[in-house]
Image (cartoon, rainbow over all chains, first blue to last red; front, side):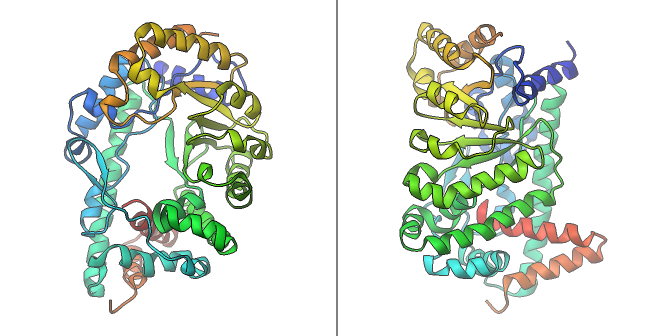
Length: 387
Length: 41
């Protein structure tokens, strides 16, 4: 089979699932990030910054050894060289072992500032948050102009560095199925503006201000995506859902769910994009609320915890189920146990289609999953998952 | 800080347009830079 035919056959597994068809077999799509560099004995820092052959080769070794149908991420999602221009203040750093978070920079504003953000999010981000986050911006206008221009050049180079690799994987028959990330506005507030304590307080004390801020952030996120002119095709727009399972269901229904529903209506229903939600933690208490999502086959939910069979059944018609391979199975199971686990998982989740097999978490370090268990899981699943 | 950071971004945007970039594209690029500063770096 040619590489082109191989690529097309892999993508077809997903397009069948997303069109309510039964594919030839269950698609195999684990979320594996910096684990691949440890497995290939390649420095993460060198792969991200020095030589994109290393980035290509690390994932190639992974998919040559482990029979998956697609990649989920290229891992190199932070433009570190661009970040260096701005000095101290960045959240992330990278070393040979992986990406690290530096300290706690999630709280960049007070709750009392939410109305100011809601008035003009672009101006608030540029004039208030950016200088607060990066002290180096306290310099002359001319120096900041030069700084921005250098950053733009680094941003362009980073895009080309990654783009070459994604194209090489495609030429090698391996699709990267996620092509953009869009955040729910409440997750933006949690991750980058108010942190956990702050947003928990906002939910209780100023829900109206929080909702108004989220409305303008939603518009900003969507405008950013539409700016790119990305066409709707078989690839996915990814959203990691961070804050919901830390909310009481009634708060989730009032503050988070409206943006989730609107996003599905705007992008899956109206524009035809495939959407992918990484449903972190346990969503069992929220499944009744999710019944008010639009009926569509264009949304995948990757579920981490809970009664997987019950989740799949309850979300049928609204979300394709992804997951089934747990951290425990990858870390601790014998190979016999891995196979037994796959038989039960597929017997529960594969009938009727609407199922993508993969890890229920992102593998970052080598101890997140034994290589022999990953190899066995996907080798066995490729046979057992035939319809 | 003796200026608003948006002023510096606007100067860059105008320079990009002078260099031939379409206005909408330059505005989109500035929106992206702001987003990356706050929510990616």
